Amino acid sequence: MNRDQIKGGFKEAAGKIQRKFGKMVGSNRQESSGIQTEAEGKIQKAAGDVTDTVGKAVDSVKSIFKK
Image 1 (tube, helix red, strand yellow):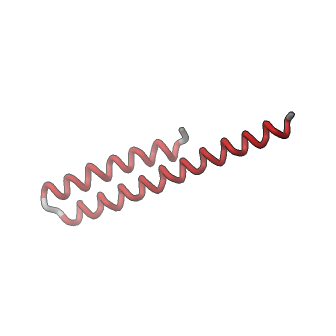
Image 2: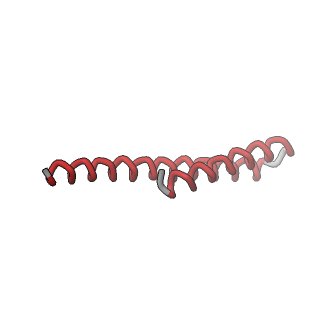
Image 3: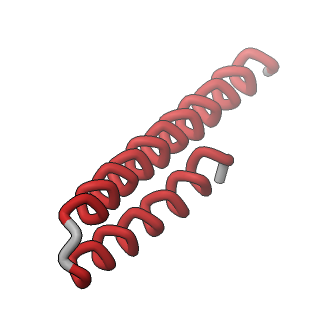
């Protein structure tokens, strides 16, 4: 796991909490802010997934050429 995957997961969880809190207290502003934070977390986590996958692919190609 890389930093983006971890930070994205935390941001996604924080957004879910904020969204549910906003819904619970009837605040559309908090709810929409939570939705935005949750989406940002999902995007950051996905970027981390891509970075991780690319890194593994690069390592695989390097090991092929070392032989």
